[in-house]
Length: 74
Image 1 (cartoon, helix red, strand yellow):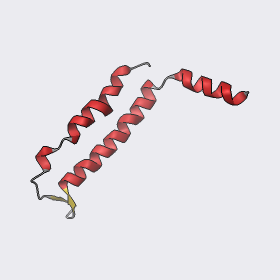
Image 2 (cartoon, rainbow, N blue to C red; image 1 turned 90 degrees about the horizontal axis):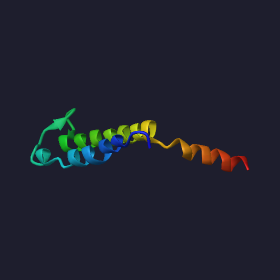
Image 3 (tube, rainbow, N blue to C red; image 1 turned 180 degrees about the vertical axis):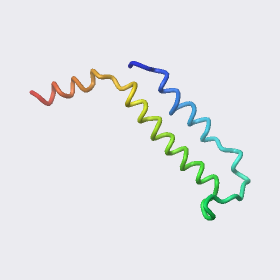
């Protein structure tokens, strides 16, 4: 893999941010109806999707695609 550091983002950073102890006692609402803890988890989910997209973009091994193409040609 080209850049192994990119694995740090979705695995470690999002795992730490997922532990949202600071929102447990909050009764605040976002947009008047979404609890802030739920909004936080929605953002974490979007961050996870972005993180894994970056992993695929920058750290995906090119040899996997070459093997796939060679297998489908035979």
